[in-house]
Image 1 (spheres, rainbow, N blue to C red):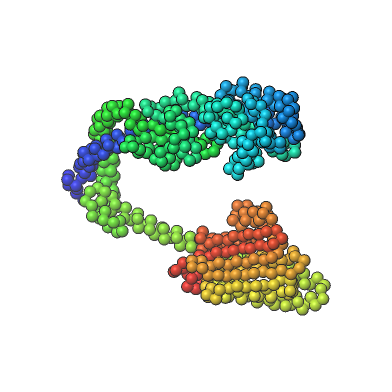
Image 2 (cartoon, helix red, strand yellow):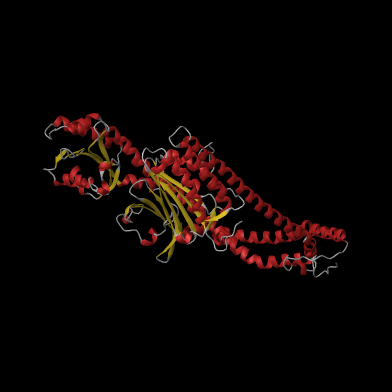
Length: 607
């Protein structure tokens, strides 16, 4: 087989690489430009997000530190005893003690504007500034207690509340006009001995404490940091005039931690980190252009270098491909031609590659025999797989028959233990067992109709009636359309046997077993339930693990495990076996078998 220079793989490879350089340089440079820009944006975004996470963490730490400090007083047994008593506002010693305790907090943190305690029992407010007030002296006391009992702020849930103080309570309880831009940190005072919520301790924290966290943080020119609530109201801002305003809807729609949005004909990078309280978030608004402008020149210079590198690498690739790719193929081509002595072979099913006139076409011609051998090997492996599947299912049948036979012989032994009329009942049991084994012992037939399976179940129940009499009641609800449907043999009997042995037999009274067979659009549902002894959750979980093979326990769930393995081998993973149970109420086992048009078991043909 001679190959012309124009059809040579070497010529085509060189032409392909030249065209690749010409056609891919533009898209490659465009891609590199955008990737570089995106990487710079990503680094800036990651830096801002990390900084915002630190800001949010500092805010959480601030609140947590104050709360831990508050616990020193809210967990004080002397304070519990005072709030449980009927002390009077005129008792200056009691009031002075409380005021001295809460006044210390203002010296610990200069950002604390005021501290007060609300006594739920006596309806008092004891302030670090104004003294003590009662509900009769100030209507705001009752109003404030009502605020704490609101479902949204229910202090009886024993949780920490952080609220933005609008000044309603600050002025009333601390005296003077004071700053209104504060945060109220409200902690429950709970008597851990008696389990009562006696009141709350409130610390009003100045906004300067929050601003101090982010006021020195600047990501770029024009960047702004806000603290916003869950409704988008700006609680605090690095730009003081923004506090109290509503955040633009475009800035609230980012959804995740960060994203680029358009607002007022400009693009902004929005970075959000949530705090641990009230769904509040710290939000950084950074003009997008200011993030990438400093790097524009560096990007352009980088693109020039990339273009030069791309051309150099392309020529190097031509040399390397010719040396390490084409030459070995050419040598292989010569070797195959020598081995085949010039004999031509058809490619058979290998597409249109057999029509190619280059080295690749010749190589694929040589592979024709290998492909044919492989196809035959696949067929042989598939046949062996079918044989293995059939063998496995037959083995499972052989496992369940001795298990059933053992239980039935145990019944015969029970009947023969000197009971009145036992000889006749033993004879009846052996006769019923003989009929049942004669009908179920044909392991060559794997599929039977639902109707035939019900007949086998009737024979089995005749054997059980001899032993248990009226103790077992059987109810059936079988859809008529399902009677002629083919299913795997020996599905129903082990399910009913399991219900008797583990559910009804242990009862002192009679029990009922319910059998339901329903045909759905794509599957057949077989359900067997009993009102017997049942299982608790721990034992039920063990049974489930035994069924699915997670654990192996001798003489546990033999019948159910056998059914599960057989339907998995025959029907595949779409077949299911589930079990549910409650102690003292009974157990339900459901088997779901798939029904697909064209399946052998749908049309009633035996495998």
